[in-house]
View (spheres, rainbow, N blue to C red):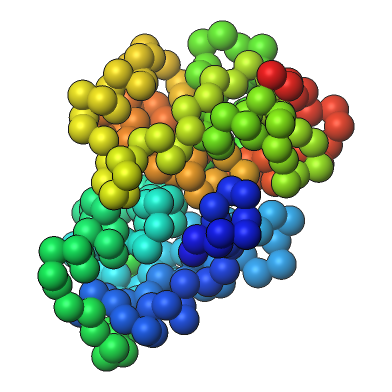
Length: 253
């Protein structure tokens, strides 16, 4: 949700109350802050096991033969995070509604107040561990020029001028592509040509995206995948984990 009092422009709360005030007809609610993440984990959006995540999606009616369309109310990152987790467990028949809820309502489409309850389905986990980067892989990448590390936070956070984490700045060696710069002023992803111009990397390189908690980083990972990069991972724990250990190298500027 947006919050004018937050310098990041984001307010990290569950979207369920807004969903209950109106949602796209027949849309269920995927609760990223609760059912789809581990309770009381070391970081806020700590991953469930693949089996637990598939069971949680099954509770929403998602099965092996489902077609899934994801949307959120702000910035695509929340939808992209669920898209990326579905990719992680081997489910590829998912899409993101470009522009999210605003795109739906701006076209004159109505919202629904009707609750959506689907029969429990079975989603079979077929994990792809390579699409998730952990602390040790990121630490190794700091001194590995063949790995491209992308910080997706706004420039002022990347430079260390602002921070909400124990230490300011960015992981040593990371480049900066602000995740919000991937969107136009209406919340739609930029054109493929514009996005490609922002990502002039070797298509065979290992690429790891991160942010504060693996949300906006998932948007850039989604974009990179659509651009044809096939060795992309998200550091899900991101700065929420990295900044707590003083031995993890960071840079200012």
